[in-house]
Length: 354
Length: 212
Image (cartoon, rainbow over all chains, first blue to last red; front, side, top):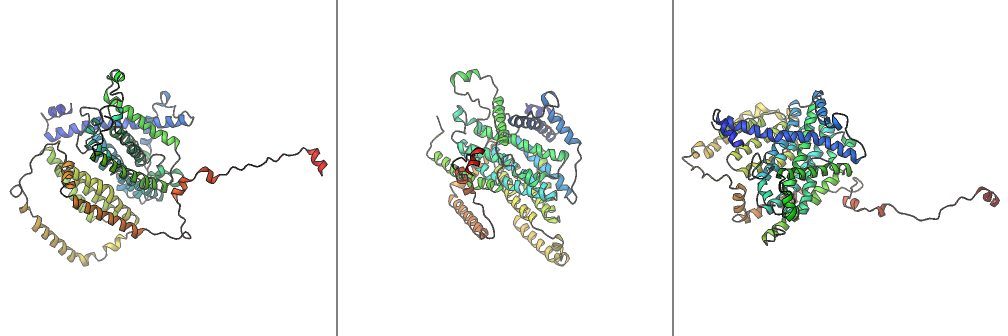
């Protein structure tokens, strides 16, 4: 579809302009739904946690509170952005941009359905996601440093140290997926899981599935790993000094990352757009009409619900315990499992359950 | 101009400007950030040259890890910029001379007469589906496996050395350490003891008076 659009545009425009316009349209097609999902994910979070704590959650704006995210966005847009004295103005402004840009850019390689429904079907997709999301840590550090505030700086140190620690465990977990799949292309990884629900990689890589999701929680600074914004200790972490829309941008980035991690987990371990009823005689035919992206969205929704559920359930970790979990538990587990998968590949054990 | 050329010149311009800013800007934190920008634009140029593994590894390793640690250090240090600039004019001639000498050496070795299509044949076009990572990995783990393992062992020794150099345990009189393993393994029974004892029954008032 986009190829024909580009071909049509290049009949009367410069070649590079046609490519640029096509790329922009592709980007908007992906980013707009993500941003809308972020808006209503905040609503879902407040509702879900509300019901878990026997409250109603927001229910005043619009029918049953469904327009609450729009009200929040309008409020934040009209709030004044306060600039702390002696802060570094350029870096203070650049920091939110550096946080949101990678969180959005990583969506370029996420496949949504079979037959290449993806902006860029590159063969180093996993590496691309890892590389791009590793840039987010700069937004955190710079915002903390440029705010010229002790609390913000402490929060930035905590958050960035946590992020780069858990990135290692996350990377190793992905390495095992690459070893089993034999490809870094996300579409090929999903296609390698074809068969049935037990062919998905969560079965042979169950510990890695857990490690990846826990690291994802820590990467996004979500509870129970949200010491970066421990209210009782350092007010709100690296974005204390931000107000109005600048503050909202940090939130957008955090929730976009949550959705991204859920998509990555679904694609890597839960068979992406593959139907869970594949290979089951009766049910497969019954559910054959469901398009693939619906299955992917259902899996992502379940994972996102886990994010919210954890927040309502677990108490916050102490900071040194977080570091211990990352370095002394998760990283050794992943390294051992890399060897296990290596040996399995060497003796040609697997693919599993065939 | 094709779209690829446009992107190439854009990234090249950003890389050059970022490199210049990195050495000319006063604030060390900003200098480190300009260096990060130079890395990212260089990674983009590598991507254009179809070296996607190298480009992404550059971002992952240098931008995502090395420069973050570097920024940590620079931010924690209280660097007096004015002191740095002291004696700038005095050392300027020597600095210019050194810079010129380095440039001349690099020009001799890397000058334009050594490159170009007359010197080096254009690389064969590869199919876009060919995996760069695979092409790098296969010789690395077969032909050069000994060198690879040697480098890995060397890095391991480096890690061990760095940790032993910085590891110090102060006596418990100075610092109180928390043993997290012990803390986590605590069970309720270790902290909390249920004691059975007979209930103390208050006697009714008249009986009490009788006893007295």
